[in-house]
Image (cartoon, rainbow, N blue to C red):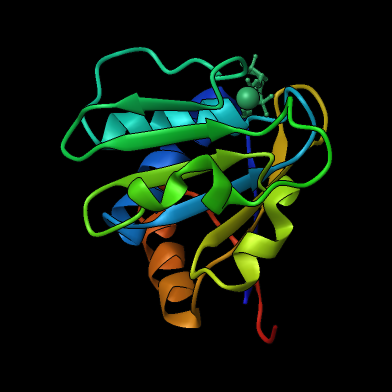
Length: 165
Ligand SMILES: Nc1ncnc2c1ncn2[C@@H]1O[C@H](COP(=O)(O)OP(=O)(O)O)[C@@H](O)[C@H]1O
Ligand SMILES: [Mg+2]
């Protein structure tokens, strides 16, 4: 299943992150892709808000992984500066994955092999015009997709849905 929606400004992209992580729950892993400035870090700020993290979220461009403490740990990974593809296991990410934390990976495509073996969420961000961003979401299962659709509807965010793989 693929869910597609348009956010009308940074606040709504944050609301999307906040709503999505509440549906995804602790232990989830989210891969974010799309051009620079498309809204990946903005989305992550919403994820952080849902986890009651007060520290500001900045792109971990020089550190690869930033860890924040909230209701549960948030591991914010940014693969932008990595050349070619990478094996996320080599980054020690397995220590971050698990029951407890939430893992967000910007430029997740650079770890392509990882996602085929992992039950994660895939999100693609695209600049439309002005403050509008198109977001395509592949949830880990149709059930999660249905739950997200309902949660977004109650926040006033409508989605288009494609069934099938
Ligand atoms: N609908 C929107 N969603 C997200 N960001 C938006 C939106 N409209 C404008 N912006 C602006 O676009 C920029 C997105 O930057 P950022 O989230 O850091 O992107 P990325 O992490 O994908 O490079 C921010 O300056 C933000 O204020
Ligand atoms: Mg970013």
